[in-house]
Image (tube, rainbow, N blue to C red; front, side):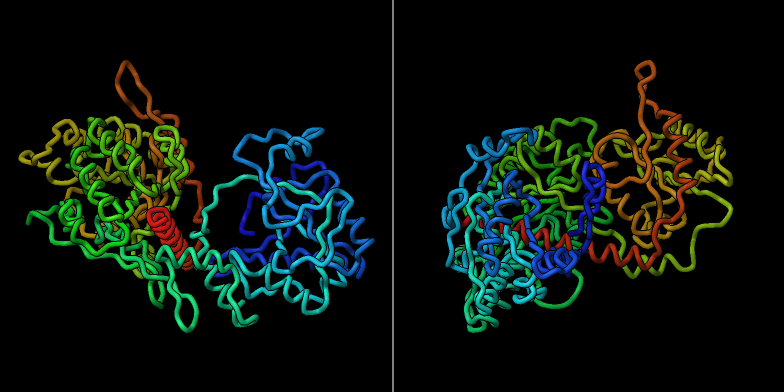
Length: 598
């Protein structure tokens, strides 16, 4: 289900395996449809024995044989093998004797039978059926009519299947010796990440059978204020989030696209404490980052993204203390492991040392960043990708007509106001040499007046001298409006990020929104985030310089790479991704609430 890697795994095995793929259904894994599709691949003989085993389960060497023996003795039954749960330990290779070793490590499920090898317990309670491991003859499967494909995502579909089995007179039997082991993976109790699926599937089950399934979980969800009971059944409780800052484009695009009652509402940014907020950041400095504001706010969740640059560790501790007084969980999204505006890492590192360990839930944007967070703070961060930056309507508008000229390859470097992590002349020299190697190559360099003008606050004479005497297409201007920025990006074939350190890039996401390739440095997490090509830095006589060979290879790769998707496909993908991101955040917020209220 929605896992492209399975084909490669299957191809590497010493026995022939048939892989049949199925996509998601409205963002959810289609467990019922997948099992039905698997069953449909067989020859269809009535006496065929179908064996179902979940992907996170390891069979014992005798599992299939035990199911076959049981099917001879109880051919009309629904057959369930016991599954034991493995702890969070390294289980090693599946060598001789592995089943005995795993049996010593694992624990059986406390609510389900564990018959001895060769023993069959008949007359089982159908509501205890689980789909982790079971076997059934084709003729019995056809009588039950398989799983109800209206169930998608987690929960309810297996209980419905077992009840329909009971309805047509199929007994449930537990089969000793048909043992499997469930591999460890983190789970929530209750499974708040599946709350929406549980409610949707539970509502369908109640319509069919007159009662809600998974009642223990529903009671716990209700006790923790995540759902409420109404005459029509259970409904999710809307979550109020204080996002810091709410008006940033990243935060605005965490909301799903479409109608209906939102699961999450975000409090508007209070007026900032000063009137001279910088262009593009009317929320700065964030008034929410104040213990007194927190003590009077009406928020279920406090979610920090940006805006704490000027706060000392002591001030951040005071903010988290105020949240804990109010029992408001802190969610922190790690956008930057290094602050791109600061040459000295010390302050930002000390701020992370407060926010990451004290957050109830931590999110980041790439797998590489999650690995770094795990390495430095021993905390598992949720990886949720960056949403689109450009509005979907603007993507379509700027794609037609194309702003890229035929017969040229335009590489853009935007130096802006030369913030601390940017490199000017050394990178421009290497980029100019790389562009000269491709047909129709044009190097466009953009820079702000505060760097270019002699009276500018960040004037760089060396850079200006290079720009005026080199074969580059120079554009000098003040800060772009959003529309000007997107028109600029849409005119480029590739954008080269001039960074010597950093973590993630919203600029990269805007480029990808507009079909512009990104060449990023081999620092931070840019490649993990999705850069199209990359180059490296070298130290020559103690001076940081771009590696010319890697930069030339990256530019050539960008020149040779043809567009991978049409504009409508790109917009559709970004729309789906945004809704998935919104769902992921709702699940994380519910998990934070459940932890705080437990």
